[in-house]
Length: 317
Image 1 (tube, rainbow, N blue to C red):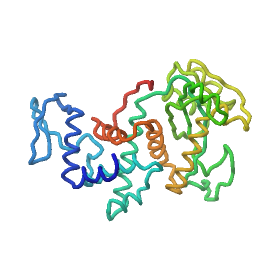
Image 2 (tube, rainbow, N blue to C red; image 1 turned 90 degrees about the vertical axis):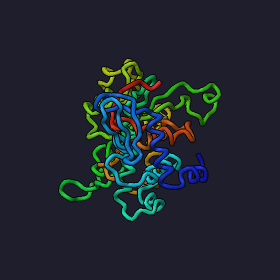
Image 3 (cartoon, rainbow, N blue to C red; image 1 turned 60 degrees about the vertical axis):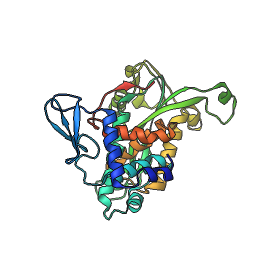
Image 4 (tube, helix red, strand yellow; image 1 turned 135 degrees about the vertical axis):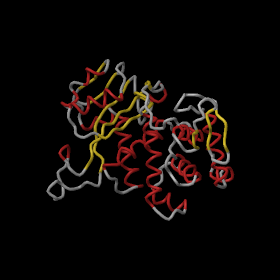
């Protein structure tokens, strides 16, 4: 949906509220008390009432908007801008566009949306051939415990946050394989997770939680990866020279490079406490890069999911 079409359809608060109500009804309502699905609408109170047990459900309850006092059009427009801007949008710019006086409520709203995106992706596991690597992302915690600046580089750095990067791939077309600058495989889905450290235990936990056991795992020869074969069907493990890293694990390096450029250009400085939230948004948009105008409705589904913070693991196919 283009911006002009969007502004005509959601021109005021009442139209956004009506859309949110109809969208929830189309997704289906479930009573939290008796699990009934038959409701009638009470317009004077903006809520539904279960015809079985008479329990009432407000328009916002069980959704991203629960306990929020921000108008409906803030949420609708925030989702639209977040999914339809290629490089994303910062909370400060969102505040300017919405015309809200305070920064904090807009910032919290955007993080709720990002968390819903992450919860949606957490319902799936990667399978088939999965590239796996770790990386560092610049965070705002640039100081050691004693207060001095952490200038150590590499795996011992204190000024960057470690993350685990996973990319599910499939065999590319014959035409793409014949081209010199094309990758031999095609990207399917990605996942990025913030990890506390780069120990074998941390990597094993990430693989168990996010990668299916029937997968083939591709990694470099880092010693901490040596036991990952216990959690997948096959593990291709070996030392990869630095000059060949982009050829052996092309998609994880491309994804992390694009992520760093996006974070630097859009936010400049990200606190490590909220880094996972930004990773959620990035991965969600990459995994649904071919949906186009349908992406807005996909995020709306995540926003009204009952409960939106729920979790169910399935396999990405």
